[in-house]
Length: 358
Image 1 (cartoon, one colour):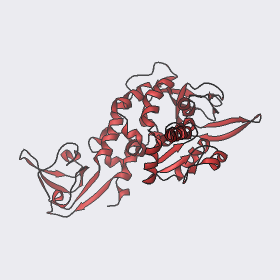
Image 2 (cartoon, rainbow, N blue to C red; image 1 turned 180 degrees about the horizontal axis):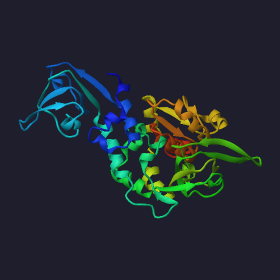
Image 3 (cartoon, one colour; image 1 turned 60 degrees about the vertical axis):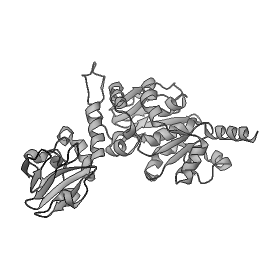
Image 4 (spheres, helix red, strand yellow; image 1 turned 30 degrees about the vertical axis):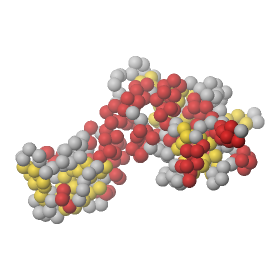
């Protein structure tokens, strides 16, 4: 059986997958594997299923469990809708009465996904027509399955997950509405649930378009991370829905957990092991004193560059002081790329070398 023959509808029959929405199930489909086992064989003697959640998709399987009871399971029905192993229990012995097909995928991936699903479902009704609690299952992009299971979101403590989505507000916005204005102090971090917006900056008296953002994209983090004023204006091009998080909540629940700071010695050790220096300054700065082997991507170009980065690599972001690179490291981290921040930037490195020299 090929992977594309497993559908979201099929996955939704099994427990605890049945608790997930259709969009979540569709994201799980590419991570599923199907294993054929011939009649009279014991699939649990053929291979080690440790770390896998296994379900009987097709055929009949004789199953003996620890208490000595024996049952015959029929694929995708009755007790076969529960995992054969994983999720806390293992069979003692099995035998394929007919040729069978087993559906399996990584148990940790399932557990992370179920954790987010259970802890972030809306706990209360909206208090007004304009602001309501966010439901992460309606979102895409930032909180796609890949980022939840492989990125740093997978490392957030469960308590942070629950608090994060209790504090997100869901806000309806109109076409041409200015959400963020250049020069204003930072107040909220935003995720786009629905709609498109335009990012512009005033250059020599004219408004220069920097980017167009769509569902799943985020904005507003730079001012909150670097403690500066807004460096661009964000205007809605269509009606939409935004998820916003206050500055204090953003710093507590997202910025600090997602910013992994390293000193120069640790950063150099990681680079020697295959990590990549990421210089986020302007090209002229980079050319003046960029670190050997570094790639140069300024923050305003980083969103577009993300798809071209190697997700198998670690990136050590740096700038002169750490302000710009902190925003860059956060942006990469929230998109599931392993990123670290050179603490204090090149100034801190230079100061440390001076102290050592004296």
